[in-house]
Amino acid sequence: MSKIRTAILGMGRMGKIRYDSLIKHGSFEIVGLCDTSLDNMNGYNEPKYESWQECIDQAAPAAVFVCTYNAFISDIVCYALEHGIHVFAEKPPGRNLSDTLRMKDALEKNNENKNLVLKFGFNHRFHNSVMEAKALIDSGLIGDIVCARGVYGKAGNPTFATDWRNDLEISGGGILLDQGIHMIDLLYYFMGEFTSVQSAIHHLVWKEMKTEDSAFAIMETAKGQVASLHSSAVQWKHKFNLDIICTNGYVTLDGFITSTKSYGEETLSYYRKDLGGRTGKLGKPLEHVLCFDVDESWDFELMDFYNALVCEKKLEQGTVEQATYVMGLIEKIYANVYK
Image (tube, rainbow, N blue to C red; front, side):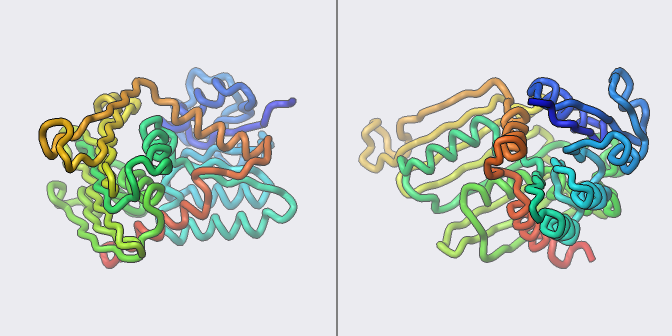
């Protein structure tokens, strides 16, 4: 079987991660790399372009990986879809819900009899701890979810205030859209849709920025399940933590394996309700811990895309419907903040 002709648009950190994953997979032929900075493409032998449109037109890929600034995502995705090209685009799916809906419309308009695939990069769903937690909860062993608490935070760097991620015109939002979107997506993944949202968006430390350095939200489902979120750029010690409380126990995801290695060891702990104090002390149930030392999320995510392209399997994660819902939820959290 011939390899899938592929171009990577944007060769920053994410473009390089995708490049390595594509090479490792082995079923993709990289026919073009694009970046406005030629330095980002040093050391690569593939054809290089400074214009994403020229890259698409001249390299003639069957699929593109869009790893650019948020402001350009929707234009590139729509152009590719209009030319019958499959797309894998990084999160967030544009700067706002309007950008996401535009891409959704482009897929629907250009997909008749073409089986085009549009996938967005929500790799956290493919982390080993997350997949194990989903299997555990779906098994019913610890009952039904009643509430969840998610904290995802990092420390802004010395140039944080002037970084492109905090330029509203380019990014569309602050820490919530940049990093917190992953936790929002995971809460949605585990709990389903939320019917009510209360939020607070703040500049707790970086007062001069137009984007937030902290976001808080409390969300509730139609079943009365409650989720809380804290997305932060003032978490001076990097932190990932998700507690999911169920009727008969709970599961905790703590730490995350990332390229920075700054979020600690990735673990999953689960506890079954023990009101009888069988362990000898009420409130201290038997603990079950799983530890993970490898991040395979990029490979699993790429396989999901490949299976949809070649095996015509239904796209499991990162669908345009999921992306649209998450961006709609973020818009509600941001309500009355960015006008």
